[in-house]
Length: 123
Length: 108
Image (cartoon, rainbow over all chains, first blue to last red; front, side):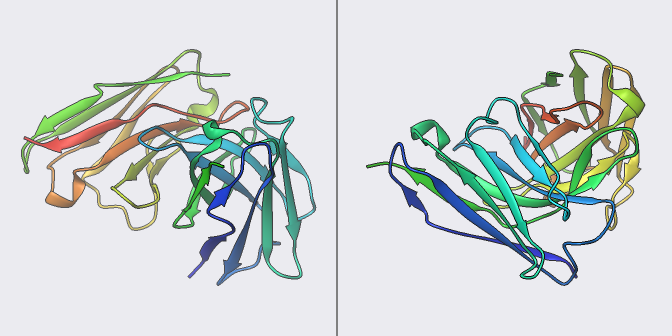
């Protein structure tokens, strides 16, 4: 059974870089047809897609965050990671990693999710 | 980007009743690439429907999706106690993928 688990600091200072890692177990991150990515949810609000990566390293980012986001993959560890730079209080959210199921001619829906990790931006 | 508007914001119903949730897109969603998720407090979203009408693995058949173009519907035929939650739609026909603001289904 495929499982995803987020890890990383729960508290980040303003202007610093948020760094999270997602560890995939029960399956290979190198599977075809799947991207791997991140979604966030500010407290009491809806979902925002951040970006995704294929095992080969190909990435897609949300234009609203693109200048600050880097997603990378480590196939040897079955992990992928998120870095979000120059954070502010507006980046406080629950961050989810998820498997992205690619649709032919389109993009992806998220069929397996991690439990999420809360990141607070505060000094 | 495609903006998804969900209505109503909150739906107050009793167990056993039928729930009808709407998701309207600001432009046509190509190939009916629309998904629905359920989220309970403190939990991650769970995929219910993809391709507008295909149920995900393990999803009960009381959940059904329909629609095309700009108008989509999630129907729960008979609400069970565990169905009271927030529901989100998501389009994946265009980049960036986007989510609706959610509909909360609460116990009346």
